[in-house]
Image (tube, rainbow, N blue to C red):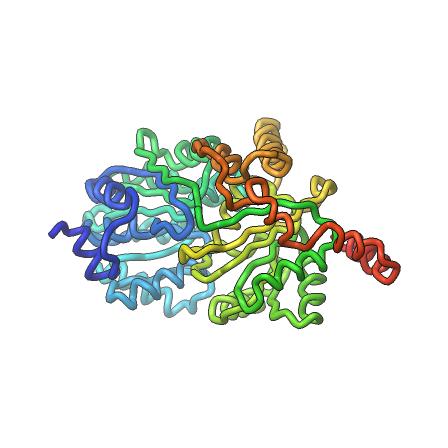
Length: 432
């Protein structure tokens, strides 16, 4: 039996490879570099985990989030694979033991942040391993974080060019769920993946159904949509921390099982909220875009955006957290004409004129997606350079019934203009 297929079946318990997984694995296992774009839930991690098991030495996986590292390490350990992660919250003794295991060739996978990887003490250890030919593979997960005009910019990722400079004989694989042409180019240049093969999967998620409609009265629209998904799990993305707090309180008062998450909360609160969301069924997370990267929860049935996203890359990544089990899931975007002025307070700006033009182009992509009268799926895929014939039948343009996800226009007009609701509506607008 083919060694990669044997590992897939016996270690990971999957019967067959999907898409171009096997092609990527053979390419990387053979010592070549690769950039891999594959939708959330498409099996990106196998594209470096299986080559890592096939190649001699340790595989170092660069990851932006501690929770994501811990989740993958636990999964690998359950499968009998020697794996660990280094992070800033570990006790000194535990970190020392992990580095000893690394130097003793006892680990097959080590997950760590880009900051930790480029630190001088760790580089000394890594160079010693490299000289003994004990470094098998570098994997850069969530590599879209390298793009300054991306939606999860992490400047530390730019320092990873050291991998090409100092360890030229070790293959590198960079993986992400989404990146347009600009972002792919910046990833390649920053990581020095010159000549690397780029594997791009279809961006289509047929099980996701799309609706884009105007935000008229937040609470009634959201509650009407939630009634469609009573007892199911979902995420509501808000443009500001203040809106997160306000909406979470209002929905809890109405009896909805809500958690909330944003970057202004303590690390303990964020970790507790995330763990509760992952462990319970039917929970609703209300958050800024600070939440979600690396969330491996298959039964998320809906995602709501309560403002226009900053980019279609971000929108695609965030909506892709729904329906990872392949079951039908609904994604709703409630936009408003004032969304341009929202202070998306989890973001990072730059003063560079070229970057400003790129960001403006991305914003125009969002506005076109919202205002278009053609199939939403077709418009989204077109942005990523993929052709689709349209008429998907599962968006509000192709099926007008989707426009009633948040209730009828007559009902919303009654809510907006009823005397008893004027004060509440005015307060809601001021909180956005």
